[in-house]
Each structure stands twice: as C-alpha cells, then as structure tokens.
Length: 68
Image (cartoon, rainbow, N blue to C red; front, side, top):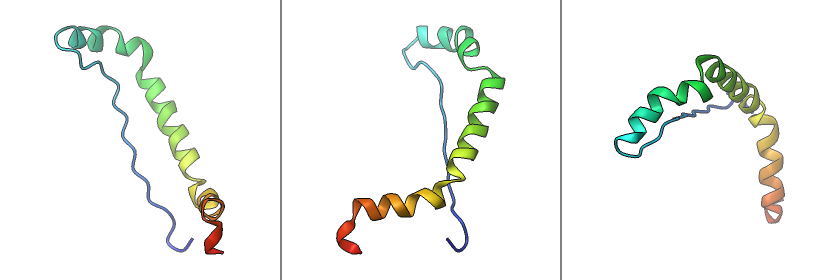
C-alpha cells in the first residue's frame, strides 16, 4: 500500500469499582501487568499490526466477493 498503514491502540488496565477499585489497582495490577509485561504487550502489538497491510486486503476481498 502506498504510504503504509497508520494504527493507534490504547490499553487500560484498571478496576473501576468505587473504593475497592483504587485499592485493587494499586496492589494487584502491578502483580498482573508490570512494566515488563507492558513492554512485551507493546512490542507484540507493533509486530502484529505491522502485518496489517499484508493481511487486510485479502480479508476485505474475502468479505466482499461481489466487488471483484
């Protein structure tokens, strides 16, 4: 694809339950989603979305066979 592909993603890891959510976010979140895990997740997303321009045209064509 000329010009490449642009992609934006945002990940929010938090409990939104009033009062207890704050406590859980401060104590439990770091155990399950550390800075290292966040780094791995970002790297995975970059690698995966870097293939979008190769995959998307085939997926679109398969979903819209009448446009061929």
